[in-house]
Length: 291
Image 1 (cartoon, rainbow, N blue to C red):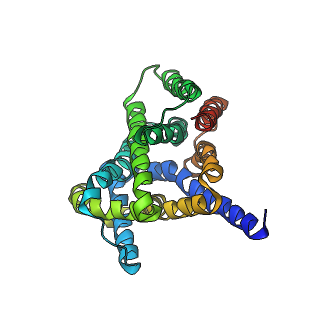
Image 2 (cartoon, rainbow, N blue to C red; image 1 turned 45 degrees about the vertical axis):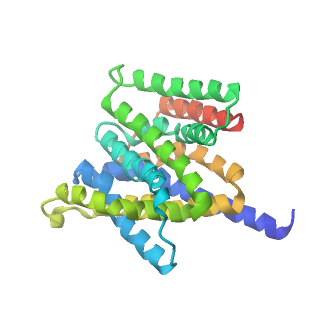
């Protein structure tokens, strides 16, 4: 391997890890923002701020406006990445811990792989389905054996977040072949702006002056980093280091979220949570390798 190639691969891992680290703090930051903001404002408001940043970048770099025939595909990306995942995960964070959510959302890479092979017309191997079912079973078992022993609204919201986001990510991957990866994210945010802004204004607080500083910082984090800058670091990493190699860094995200939840919101790190997270991550890793 040449030195330039080795440096490129190393930088890919650095950017990829930075992206995963940014995303892993999303759930605990969301929980902090929810202490004083309305859930709808938190779930959709982040997209409003990210849309403004995206518009500035698209105009500055003179990106061509997408042809109308691509709008249905962008609508799928918007429904999953801009609305579905942020809103549903935010609603879930009202009633459960961020470390709990990390275990269920740990299925996201495997679900994205499923929608990817489905949209591409591929036929997954039997082993893929075995690990997909095993991972899903672990998540259901984790939900049922936590608390009341029944499926709660938070569980349904988190599973909905996984499904909508993975479908949106898979569709976004197809669009990226035409527009580029970060361009897809930015255009999806800009196109969603006129529809999301009125809803966000309806759920905004009566006085922003009463919002505490740590809540503002948390909201700005999920808006500027989780919804915007994180995608740039992640896609840059995939470009430099390769999808197969850098993509494996996603397996660290549940554990990073659990650690971040302990430091930021004081959640306890239990052996049970770590064990289920490890089981889900193993299913995801083996499923992606055998798809």
